[in-house]
Amino acid sequence: MRHLKAYRKLNRTSSHRSLMLRNLVTSLFEHERVETTLMKAKEARRIAERMITLGKRGTLHARRQAASVLMKKSVVKKLFDEIAPKYEKRNGGYTRILRVGYRKGDGAPLAFLELVEEEIAVKKKKKKKETKKATAKSAPKKEKAAPEKKKEEAKEGPSEETVETKEEAKEEVQKEPSEKSEVEDSAPENAEPEETKPEE
Amino acid sequence: MPVPKRRTSKARRDKRRSHHAWKGVALSICPQCLEPKLPHHVCPHCGSYKGKEIVEVEEG
Ligand SMILES: [Zn+2]
Image (cartoon, rainbow over all chains, first blue to last red; front, side, top):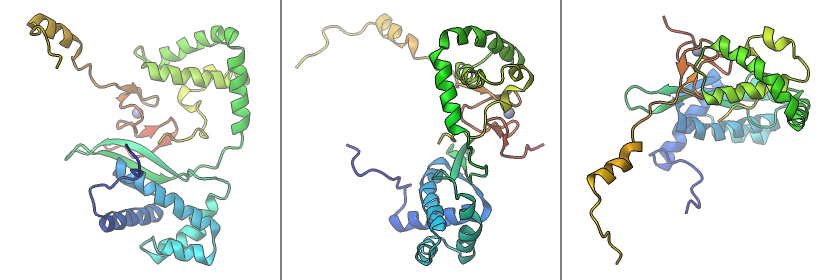
């Protein structure tokens, strides 16, 4: 059973692990992005998100709690004065993990852990409704979507992965009701709006 | 205790293994530069991910 197996031990003793992750999170706030192994990034993310929540709280107690984790006083100041205010409107998900391949020496999966930069998207609810509508009357939609899809495929080369074609189909469904004419003009990579959640 | 009645013949064994061949790495195509890349990874060729997001400088 996987009871009580919530966290990764990362092959380290408790103190070693805690120090490493604290260092990593401190570096993250200092440089806005760090490159580590995927597993370390996933563990550090927990702590980093918690630190930003403390930063948003902004009380003296929160500041002391953050200072007990972060390794540099200057970083605590930066967290409370610069980083936390940026996430005023964002409820969690302040960080992003991007996979960047495998390390040469030991094949470990590497990832960037970075602070999310973009403004939070306001239109999110609207978009969802539109997709629901689109799926509701899917029968005529499919016929319309099909020729456009072919065009895009032709642009991007003959051999498309099935996953990607699915994604494209999604994009088109989202856009379908409003901007039908723009689909052909705009490049497909710019079509996906930024507010989609980072997959982690 | 239940036990196999017959030794598995070479033909039967090999037929079973006919599906075991490695089918290669599943690659997707970078929407930015159209190069093959690992799915859900930053493109090592142009450094982009999810379209706009250019994450690393390309090395010459
Ligand atoms: Zn690329």
